[in-house]
Amino acid sequence: MVINAVTEPVKKQTPLTVLYDGACPLCRREIGVYQGLQPLRSDSPVCFADVSDAALALPPGTSREQLMARFHVRGRDGQLHSGARAFLMLWAALPGWRWLARVASLPGATPLMELAYRGFLVIRPQ
Image 1 (tube, rainbow, N blue to C red):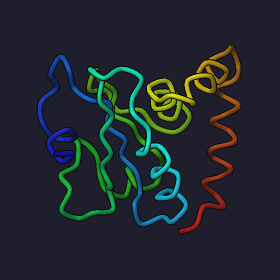
Image 2: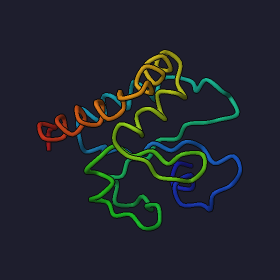
Image 3: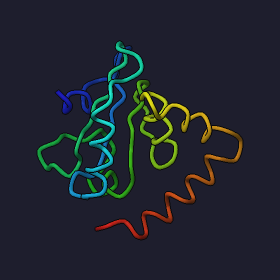
Image 4: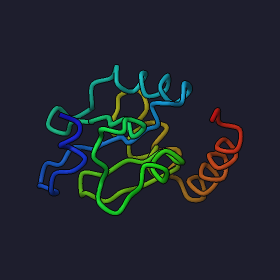
């Protein structure tokens, strides 16, 4: 269950967990694309958690507002990442997107991607 993937203590095989704003139509559409893909490694699942769902338990030290304001991914190591870095982690785990993660990991690319993402947040549907 996705809720457990977010709140249970970090274990060696903690899944990559995508924390997204399911109240945002554009976000739901993009996440739907990702959900339709099988992770590159069968032993490394990707879970999806809609943080707009008030019943969802949140990772310790976070708020619903914080998680809905930006795209977040909880890595397999249990660390929470947001923005461009979160997208890179997700893309690296999915077929058809890994190439973009590699390009965006080139020197200087991630800061530019973060800048573009922050620009998008200004115009994102509320």
